[in-house]
Every structure is written in C-alpha cells, then in structure tokens.
Length: 344
Image 1 (tube, rainbow, N blue to C red):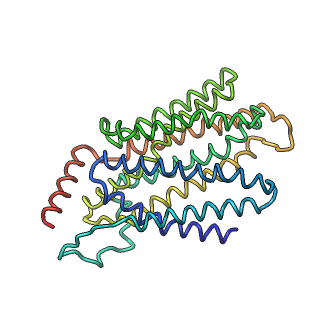
Image 2: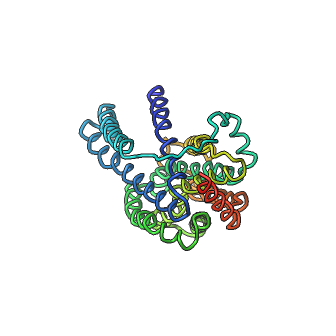
Image 3: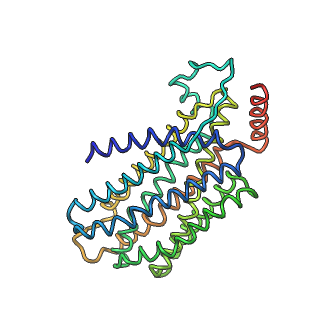
C-alpha cells in the first residue's frame, strides 16, 4: 500500500504541476484567473462526488470489512480519472513564441532559493498553503469524533454536509462575479477573515450554550466553506506570484514555484492529518469509554472549531501582512508584460 501511494503521488505530481502551471500563461488579469480557478474548483467538487457516490454502493456490495470493494472502487475511479486526463492532454494546445534572445540554460535549481528570498507573494502563498491545508484535513478527520462522541449520532454529519453543499456550489458560481468588483486577493482575504470569525463565533456559542448538531454543522460548514474559497481561488494567485517573480528576477520559473507551493500544501496536509489524532491522546480521549469526560468533550470542541479558526486567521494574516502586490505594482507588472509582447 505504501508503494502504491508513492506511485500515485508521483504520477499525480507529474501531471498536476505542468498542467497547473499553464494557468498563469492562460490568464492576464484577476477576472480570468478567478474564472479558471472557479472552473477548477467545480471540477474538483465533481471529482470528489464520483467516489462519494460510487464507493459506498460498491463497498456495500462486498461488505465494508473486506478489501475487495475498496479495490474495485479504486479501479473504477482510476479508469475514470485516466480517461479525463487523456481528454485534458489531447484537448490542450499550448502556443508558444520563443524569442531569438531567449536562453535555454539560465534556469538553475538554486533559483527557488532566490524566489523564497525576494518573492513575498510566494512566501505568503506557502504560509497560506500550510495553514489552510492543516485546517482542511484537521476538520475532515476530527469532525467524525465530534458527531460520534459529543452528539452521539454520526448521521448528523451527512445531513449537515448536504445542507452546506448549496452554499459551497453557490460560492463557486458567484466568486468570478465578485472578483470583478474586489479583485482576487481582496476576495480571498475577506473570505478568510469572515470564515475565521464565524468559526470563532461558533466556539463562543459552544462555551455558553448547548449547540444543536445541525446548527453546529451548518455554521461550521459556512465558516470553513468561506475559507475553502481561498483553496479554490489560490491557483489564480499562484499565477500572479509567477508574474511577480518575472517582474523582480527576470525569470518566471513556473514549475519551481508551482511545485514548491504544492510541497507546502503537502506539509499542511500531513500536519493536519496527524496533528488531530496525536492531540486526541492529550485531551484524554479513550475509545473504550461510552461517554467521554467533560475535559475531553471540551478538547474535541476546541479541535473541531477553535483550532481551525486559528489556522484560517493565520492564512488571512499571510495575505494581509506578507503579500505585497499592490495595485501600483500590479500596473507595473502589466506594463512589463505588454512591453515584452511588443518586443516579441
């Protein structure tokens, strides 16, 4: 299983990084970046729905305690994914114009160190990637314990997800239009700030009252859903960070920037996946107990609501205090790109 996971990640990375790097080349402004990022987000939701719909049916046919159903589900999803990847490959055409003075050997492995030192938007994105992925995977892993140990009914989790889904779909549809008014970076900052505040408010509600599981699920879904807008829209900012890198260093280095940003996201995923389970021991969780202690219940509420709020606000802080592409800098970047096209 470990070897299969390594092969999967390697294959995914070899396809994801070069295709994802095209986003910066395909877009020239916030509106185009938002539209492409929104389309990517909708595709991601559809892709997540396929195993969610196929998996339970197939696994149920073979029994949930055997590996056969999981293997068949994986094969079905792999075939569907492979067909879509081939469609993506054959339907994508990159038109490039190489100038006579273009150097083919001026990109070095050490360039990424220069990017880290000089490209503050890239650093902000890496901080955001670690924080937001930690939040995402922490909520995903701990929510089950919240419903099973605090509310003693896991069906509320499915109901809450269903109730929150229209908000998620609506936000993805509305984002490109809102982006035309605010700009991509401001939109992400506002979504993170409001999402973090909603999660913090929910934790405050847990401190002073008994929150109904559906109320908890919907409020947490809206708060984390607003934060998830940044996950779907971040790819547009990666494109802008690549443009900024060309502006300050003369090199675009799409692959290095995109790949290193994905590494930061993987770090966040690893932290979020392991942190929650590790802390369960700290708060005194005991799976053998039918009813957890009051301190454990408080710890679960903190893990599920307060800690994600902190990471969401940490992501907001990265864009508020580290990101430095102002409207003036953006205009200079645009002028440089136009001058480059004119010379070409």
